[in-house]
Image (cartoon, rainbow, N blue to C red; front, side, top):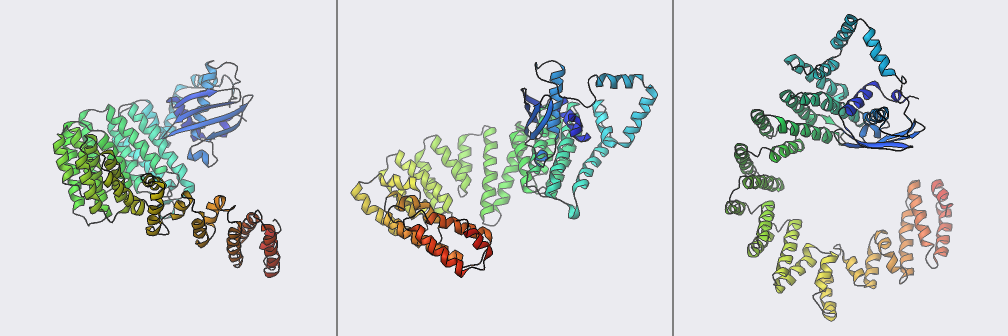
Length: 557
């Protein structure tokens, strides 16, 4: 079979477009396979196996190929390969068979040259009148100016893509999402990229924005991350425009981004706009606007209800505000004053502490962390982070008493069950002292605070056994079986028996019965285990004889 026949016509066209724009990189060839990276909205790895010039297998890690399709990235690689072979850039490798044979391009050229030019012209006009997509790309190829009518056609083309895939209730399901995203990527990569190549930045920006807003509002199964791929490609186009456009148009782009951070776009799509806005626009007039904008955002969220979201969003925008201040070369004292006014928020406190430590102002860092532990006393994770930092600072400054006290707080409360912290505290005491201190820990720790791990590391196997036997199910038994089996085989075997008998007492499905049989196999490896399992199975064959699936699985023992 000739390789072109493997692909749909539109996939072939897109693959050729990728190849023509130089998107095939890192081409590697051998007698048995070819492979390369093909750049689209992401970088995709394409591998094609061959035997004597015949394709035997093709793979690509794009979503479209994952569904078993031959994709545009494969076609792009094959076009690139044939070009290399045609230009004799690779020696000793058989050429892949083409659909219409050697000299086909010459025959097509001859066909067109020999045709009446009026007929060719009329034929092309007929095609362009009936295919808006082809007309748009034809005008792009000719570098024509883009008229309002052209823009209307482009926008209609975008609408048609959404209409084509959105089914009942305007929802795009998982099975249609891949091709939907692929068509949007093609529009971005072919039509809009063509506009960029022709320096039509205004039109490219307007259409990219249209796609970005529409896909953010589209209800779809996005299990494969298609929205992220399209949004990322939009950001790439925005970035390219910013690098090429004049200052006047840059101001227009800035206004659009600012206007669309007002809640009109779903929050996770706003993140892309934030990224492009704050990673660019470094001129003073933009920085002044961004400073005012971030301050307004901080004030807005401060007025909100006292909740997690309030703290999160105030911290987020305050950090943005500080970053803009730094870009403006604001004095450090001014930045510190801003931080101090907002120390009630965790993100600002962490930022300020980090700055204090960088300039070796340890007293201020310790003071803010200690205050933070009081303010955030109801947020265990945040307080644990503060405590870890305090422990490190106390040790670094030689404050042994405070260091030891903080370690105890961590072991008993903030990082209970953490082996590294536990061992660090242990290192501060002699062996005799530690025997007394660890009992304090065992007495005060909650039974769900990982005390079993502490018993194991201290080799208190009798206590560990009791913990295992008292726990429901077999999770802890299997976790500690290796260290307990030789010491307490009968106790563990009895635990297995109790659990497996309880499991068998309830009618279940074949999967559950397989689990039971797997447990019985583990039991047979214990001393007297075979005898116990034989008795259990004998009893079950009488007691549960009507459970056909269970009886089948027991035969596999």
